[in-house]
Length: 367
Image (cartoon, rainbow, N blue to C red; front, top):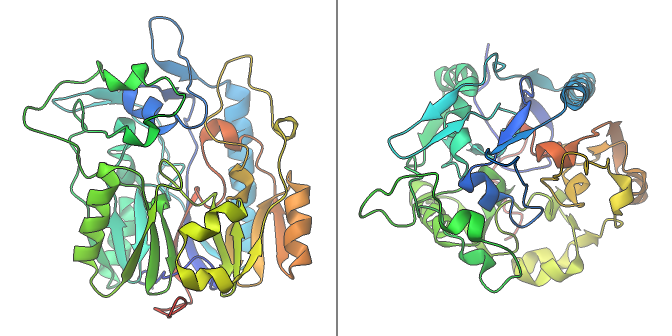
């Protein structure tokens, strides 16, 4: 019998999880929405005359091996693992305003957030991800039939000028590839839309931290507060352009991993008294060199993107030995799992997962 969703936090005992599916992820479609989303890291450059960022087949195969190893480790830890349907033929998807090649459902944290007993489909930033959740819907319907709630944020048109690039104002970055947005049509009268990813949120029982970096996100926060009046949403002002699960990582009540102590003042006051883990720095030499084909998608902090099995156990990239030792010194049991190409496919273990059933409830961790 299927369980309803129950997921209020990032660290109580994990019982059921959806792990993303990388099959068919042979390239990125670098349209203007994709370029803006990854602008804070390395702006990818497509071949002249096109916008496809091809990924060597060997690296796709290695990603699939690593994800299968991740699933096996979760299963061995007693977690029920569910998977989306694989993409067998990546199609071009279209709206009246744009066209894009679809993205496989690998980083499932982004397009959905579980808030207690409710599935919330979010409002995609990248056009190629608009229909990504369709591959998860067989599971969503089982959860619905088991008694779960299911809501969706308004689907954005993602027409020209829907995206707000103001986070980058005054920064030494080249916005020319995205501000013109010439690969889309204008929808007259449409301004900045509600555009929001699940990984902009960190859940702590009744409290949810929400990163807001622009007008798109501010509309998302407003929607969440209206839809969930029983939860407390704490606005965190622009600590990143979008996702924060490689910056703020609660490991259990009273223990928080932060990319840098500089972020602490941006967080709610009760978190200031928690024990803080600052992870060791990763050098560029710790990652594969993709200079032959010209892009990384994530920063060198991506290995902070860990997944907690419970308050004492965490899955960590086995290639990040310094981080494993640091977490073990704080009394955590580490499950090492290899993840070679996390900077190429834009996600770590937290990104790859949607934790649908955890043991915890609506606790007052920040009361």
